[in-house]
Amino acid sequence: MELHYRGMTGPDIVEAGEAPVSNMYRITPFMHVPDLEAAVAFFTGILGFECRFRQGIYAYVQREAAAFRLVENVGDEGAPPGNRRFCYYVDVNDVDAVAAELAPKAKLLNDGDLYGPIDQLYGQRELMVMAPDGNLLVFGQDLTRD
Image (cartoon, rainbow, N blue to C red; front, top):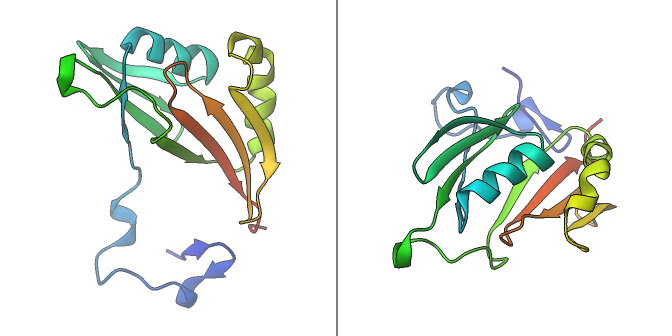
C-alpha cells in the first residue's frame, strides 16, 4: 500500500512500527448532544447522513466513510452542550460539492450557522456548519492534493 499525505508519498512518510497500516479505517467521535431527536434530524435531514442504529440515548449516523456516535446528555453526567469547544472535522474530496448540496437546506439553519467554503492559509478549503446544539462541524478539502 502506497502512503500519501499532503503531497508526500511512500518513503517520505514514516510508518508506525511494523503494524499493518490498513487495519484502522475510520474514527467515529462521540458527540454529546442535549436532544438526540434534534441531532439525528440535523444529521439526516440537513447533512445527508443515514441513521444506521438508534437505541435509547444513542444513535450512530454515517455517510460514506464519515460517522458520528451521538449520545444524549443525561442529567449532570453528560458533557456540556455544544459550547464551541468541540469541533468535528470531516475530510472530503470536494468541499464545493458539499456546499452545493447544503445550499437548498441553508434556510433551515440559523443565520451564520453556515460559513464558507473558504480557502484557509494552512492549505485547506473549508465549509463550517453549526449544529442546532452549538457543535461545530467542518468539512475540509486538502488544497495541496493533485
